[in-house]
Length: 273
Image (cartoon, rainbow, N blue to C red; front, top):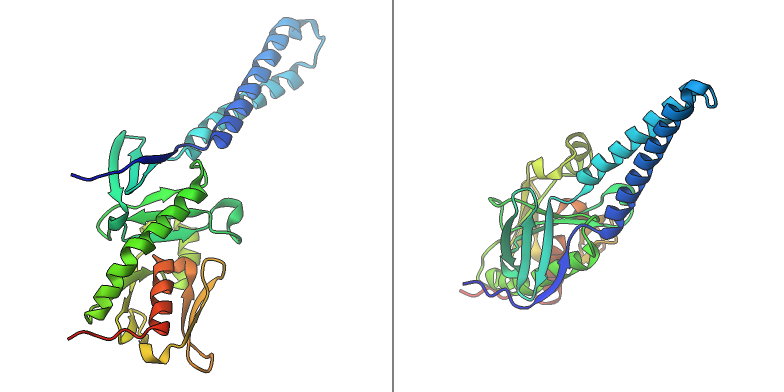
């Protein structure tokens, strides 16, 4: 039986986004109805421009309907409840609940949406493993930034020590990533990064290998730069030359990858027999 722990917070549809569109839609519909009454009452007497009022009425009602539809479109399909030991995912279409402990969150993908496309990372998706579905946290979720930060930190807390143990036992920790062309061009064409093919980075205590043909000895890596505030993650040699780089927004669980590399630079891991 899973111990969820104490309920810490609820993260539903952000009230600001919900009420703004709802109020605007209602006002437009009311305005359209008022104009329609004026049209029926005074239209025959020629007090008002018949065509002008008719056009304004149709525009107000149509725009109100569009806003109602838009509200349903931007409404998140999943909302969340944060517990001490994990996250409860509530699927709105089928009203199904699924509790995911922090220790089972394997992949985290951070990205930008809307007006923040070229600025801050304001959205996240996470999953248990490659066979499981993604759960998306968009800015339309109430207090999304706090929820994202907690999930990211909890993954570091649980998976960090596990990964270090695997590396010390001469094992491999695997990360998924998207190539730069896929993460920019194909995301624009498809509109959904979840449909893309993934490639792999394999990290061991001896080397880093990628599906793109990079093979880097860990002893050659002396510095790492980049993170969520930088576009590129770079692995550098003792002279500051770049051995390997990829966009932060292309790498799943990028913060965990950076933390492991930093630890291995500062404390070379002795491999147990």
